[in-house]
Amino acid sequence: MNRLVIKGGNVLLADGATERTDVACDGATIASVSPIATGDTEVDATGALVLPGIIDVHGDAFERAIMPRPSVFMPVARAVAETRGQLLAEGITTAFLSVTDGWEPGLRSRERLRDLVDELATDGSVDRPPRLEVHVRHETCNTDDFEELLAWVSTRKVSMVSYNDHTTGGIKLVKGLSDQRVQRSGVSRDELQDLQDEAISRRPDGQTQETRLAEVAADAGVATACHDPADDEDLARDLRLGVRFAEFPVSIELAHECRTHDIPVLLGAPNLVRGGSHLGNLSVADAWAARAPDLLCSDYHYPSLLQAPFVLMDMGVPLAEAWATVSATPARVAGLDDRGAIETGRLGDLIVVEPATASRDARVRAAIVDGRVAMLAP
Image: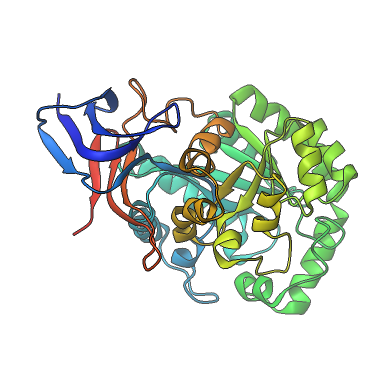
């Protein structure tokens, strides 16, 4: 069995303290957190932080690798390979690829979801870092091929589900068809409007299907989430569906209400890093000041998830609390109790990070997955 030792770093321990010590992995798991003489493989962490690997439960930046320009599609296998490299470079050791199960054609269609499910089922994902999971953002008004979706969830080919309704009259934020939606669909605005009108007519059937989907997900142990809840009516629906966490509540007040019902709140790291929402929605910095969110995700920009905890630290948040938003808490909401902390017996999913300074963003020196070096920066 190969022993990997990360030597001389400032290790974030499971109790929240930071200690300069070594971390040893025997095979896939952490064997010790203490000074070690030597190992078969050694990683120098001098002057750097040793942290649990980042767990991203909601990220769709991989879509740009699939469709780099409107209506230009690249092979899914090539897109997945490209995404793996970017994830490791940003310290993400477990990534839920958030792919839409939509009624619209093009990038966010069932066809693209099927391609990704098939690719991850056959590309040896268990042995290739980082760990990739499928997070389906199921559109309420997409009622086609429902049994196929249930089969994926029941067999855990899909390991996370969000309930979405990006139609006029669905998610409260959606007022019409954006230019971006038209471009990614590959059809004209009038054609897409007709498809949306038809989809909206199926909403009652889709709501019935959601109830069944929630039952199958619960039986399979698949985590579920609500997307963009806006009011008490949405919260009542989400409680009925038994969601495990809430993605992007539209107000601080609703975020607090979700937490009152033991529903953790997820917000986007790019919002925090940029200093605001690109859509003019809730500011993560304001929400954090009000103690509203629990965890962060990459949303549409993987690099932001590495930088976000350091932004929180600049706001006075301790390292352990800031890092929990991208590792320990996502692990908990996703039901991944084998990772998210550095302690004996946990998976050897670790990153060595040169922390952010006044003049430089944080940088990943090394990413370790399953106790093996997956990425080593020059």
